[in-house]
Image (cartoon, rainbow, N blue to C red):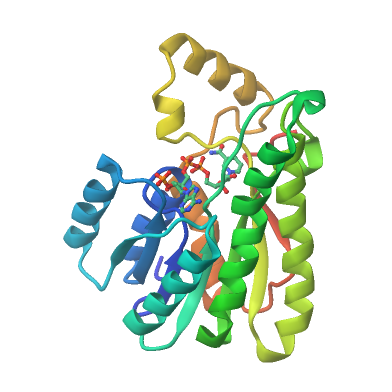
Length: 251
Ligand code: NDP
């Protein structure tokens, strides 16, 4: 299906691995020019650059640690230069998580997770404002955990809830300019981290979360990309301030 995304310009944060990589590659295949960023050098950077080269288009994989405000500012400045001062789609995907009993959660760890998951998303959007215009779409990657709650991940869940409030308010503030803000709330998605687990743990996780899911299986980054591409397209031009679940019907 042609969503008429060809020639659009997108910034996707955290695109070297996992969900972000799936989004970047799907957009590039649809003819979107993509800038993405990462924090740590790894083999994923070179392999993504190779794959993007094969799709054709104007793509850039840049190093920018989003926990550093100065690096966010530099990333957005560079993105503006690359795309001639406009972004049609911004995807706040980069995120971090840890599993810690609430009673032992240090303020340092609380702050680390908040900085990457919320403060960075806020600063990326704020620095992107001059590049966003009528019809632009901002998508933040949230989590179904906000509704369900998960033990040991109170700090992470709080950050994903914050993204919902941020998006809803920005939808109202920038609605008159026809800039849309939505959250895509994920269930359990198979990424490299999942595939790196020992087989037994992987099977247990697939079984446990598969059983909680209406479709009886985990999701894929490509399936998340489908929702993001729809939100980037003109088909979703009246959709804003929403949270769209891509979770296989998990409960
Ligand atoms: P991964 O850990 O697999 O990938 C995270 C990506 O973000 C990597 O490219 C990483 O770069 C980048 N990143 C992380 N921190 C920073 C930073 N400070 N600066 C720049 N880049 C950074 O995550 P997932 O793909 O699993 O998750 C992606 C998003 O989806 C997250 O927001 C997550 O909370 C959300 N989500 C995921 C679910 C899942 O089941 N996978 C479920 C619900 C929500 P690097 O390689 O350099 O570390």
